Structures are given as C-alpha cells and as structure tokens.
Amino acid sequence: MSLKLGSAIAVSTNYIKSNPAVPVYNGEENPNNLYAVIYHIEIGYNESSVQKIKQYIIIDYKEFDLSQDKKNELIEIGKEYCKNKGISENDELQIALLDDNEEAEIFLEKIFNNMKVIRGLITKKD
Image (cartoon, rainbow, N blue to C red; front, side, top):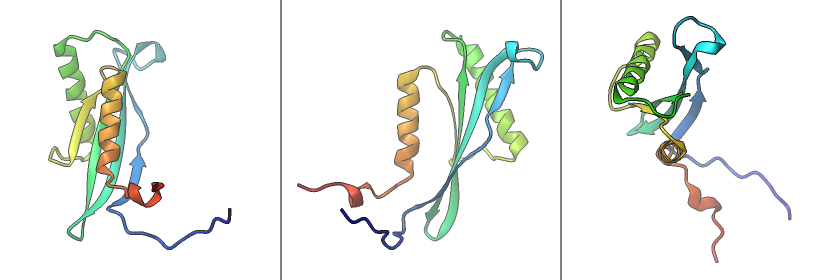
C-alpha cells in the first residue's frame, strides 16, 4: 500500500475547541466538595459564507439521583458560566446535564453529527 496526502477538501466545520474544564463545588473550594464539572466545547462552522460557533456546555455531576430542583440549579450554574464567559443565550448555545451514559452518548453523537464532516469520502464501497 502506498499512502499519500491529497488536496484539502472544504467541509462546513472550521474547528473544534475544548475549553478547560471548570469544577463546581458544594461549599468551599476543595476536592472533597467537588459536585460537578462543566465542559465547554465550541464548534466553528460556515453558514452562507458567515462563520458561526456552536457552543456546548456539558455538565457532568457526581450524584446519580438528583431532584429536578438540583438539576435546575446545575443548569443555572451553566448559565452563570456562560454569562461570565460572555456567551449569549441563543440558538447557538446548548446546555446539557449528563444524567447517564446513554444520554451522554446521544448528546455527544449529536455534537459530532452537527460537525457535518463528509464521511462518505472514506467509506469503502462494495
């Protein structure tokens, strides 16, 4: 097999950026009080020659059984994170809690589907 790089192919996705994770503490800021972690992923893409950015705020938390009030509180913490980072609440922003592994997989699949990568170019045809 003789592999060789080809020419670049234009795709809708310009970049993917993972920002540093931000811990959420219940009480004082120390490892024993770690309650959740906020992950922030940005996906840059072009739409009608205009660059846009999809913002995904993913909140992973330690407890398995959270009440709806506690979940809402975590969403509010996510909104506070966005406000502190200057991220406006619009169609380009999605805040999600990772309730369980299945939900995490579905959410991450949605992120990668939104990347609009041309997969057919590398699919083997029979």
